[in-house]
Length: 285
Image (tube, rainbow, N blue to C red; front, side, top):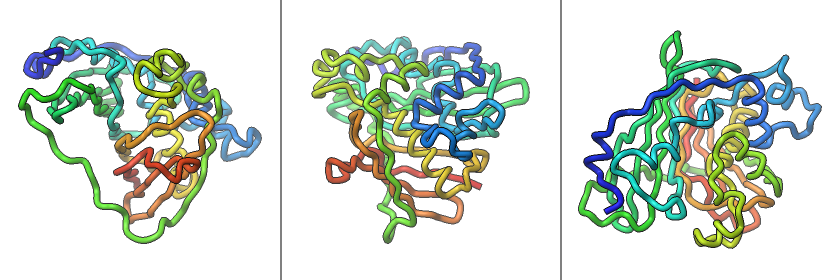
């Protein structure tokens, strides 16, 4: 079996130094659709060095996300075909606001391995600290198709009850045709998002948008719409990737405001709101 759960869980964590600067933050923000309109003062907070604040989801790519998903797929006990890999979900906990530039230590390990029958799920955890203490914790849930069925723990359910009532706010965000090509410059070079032949081999008609790009676009919409544009209010952010997005489509982002959290659902507008992000929650101050 390509995945040896016991060996993967027992593997030594991988630790490395990561660094990022304002250019990396600016590129990430452009990759998740910031800068439209280009001269809007609210957008300049994402695109101009002198006003720069950092969207918390930048944590998923800071230092090119290393040690990250691709690194985790080469951990002891894991030997899988990248064409069978899908990003199933992502959760992020912020311990304090992200600086626009920094150097930190990232420690990555496989925190859990679950048997979903037709697939295995790897939970890859990255904890990042600097000289002032913890910065953030990332958990990536990775589905590996065809690798389940060994009788292991199925893991907890992450499904949430649907939000009640009509959304408090609905916005739409158009995805540029070259959005995936721009976003991949922040570190995720999986050919699934750029190479038509690779995408077809993986079962898609054409390259798909990175799930983490949709993740970033959605968080920006929540911050700008319901959190007064204040990125420092975000405490945690979790989602389940429920479907694919193709460059050129439009995301319809529906939000339900709570006392300390925003529930979110995202669909592809041109495909009758086919679910894209589900079980999504932004916790905030």
